Length: 367
Image 1 (tube, rainbow, N blue to C red):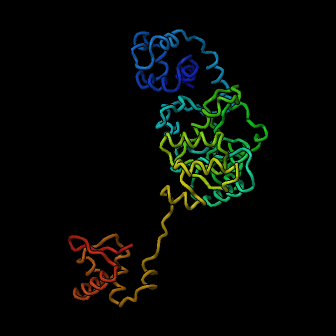
Image 2: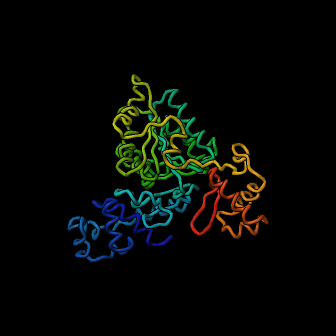
Image 3: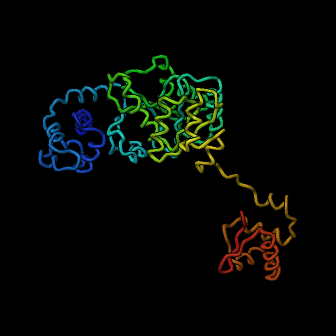
């Protein structure tokens, strides 16, 4: 691995240098190694850095932890994804506070065309389990990656349902990749590495401390096109994820629940306050996201059902069906009909809404 990786990891360890500052520094100096070799005054004048942060960078000289992390990465075949890496999740770059560095173990393409986050309470009831599994069952075959937080409850249900439906699923962790929390999900995590992946911004030996979970949630929200809240109370990580999603201009959806059910209180709150759109099934999601596949209806079958065509009209429509659009002269030659027969057939077809005439005596079949 290149020496640049050592400086990339080290940059995340410099005191008072957060992800936003790291981005500003990379934009100015191009790469991490150049930041550490830059002159103090060139660091100081950069907006948001100043004397304190410039001094922190210049005084930083302990690269041992970065080197240890590189050894860990090599040993366990983990992919380090710095913000400038082409494989870094590009959706995250649109979030102002996206992580400078990520660590990834898996085979799912984090830049695929459709990614959704499915989140909810750790203490779900049967209703939450049912609608979560039903949602993902209905999404099978749609080439969508399911992202969640590998927690108990809805997170685990979503991951398991995705694997069962042979869908890719990615778990975002609030700790390093040297452990799994909760430990009961270790087996599930192993399956996910084969059927998706595990992603984190935290180095190995980072414990799943409470303050790490909101940071984890911002990745769940930022990496996705849409966030679906299945079942949640009025407090908790799912509402944080939904709020983050709104802040990132993501589409947020929620399943409604009974008004006296505390486990649906959060979903009902999001819907009531226009923080999430109400959905009841996968079709609602697909339609709202513009992902619904259009059914290709055979023009020939449609005409046979609704319109009785003359022999000349059938010849004309057969030729039109083979071309996106065609000039009347070419249509005449291919049909081997008289010019008056072609003109008459086109006129009748246009009146019946089967054909559209375009400028320049061009014709096409209507969908």
